[in-house]
Length: 120
Image (cartoon, rainbow, N blue to C red):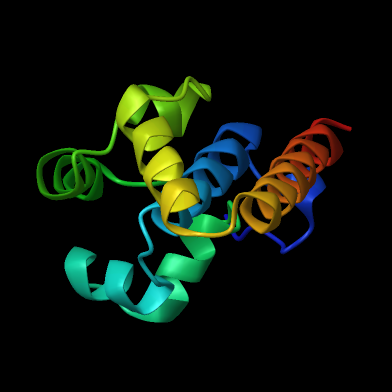
């Protein structure tokens, strides 16, 4: 069965996992292209995972866990791992605090609004 690009027809779990994965790769400074290369798939397939059209399959979960030390509880449940927070703190310490704080708050609000929109 084909799924439309319409969020109402996407599996909400896939949408949440895709958004959390996007947040994770951005927090470690990884691009979509780099993720595609790591997973051994096309960038278009990564985009479908990140926008919730496709699920993250078992082999990709294994790569995320073992190669990126990605906490799958965060990806599927939204529970942030301390490593993710430490990456963010490290980034803040390297940059101008006011600029990073503003960017981080805006990014977090945008992320939460997207989650709320997907639940409607």
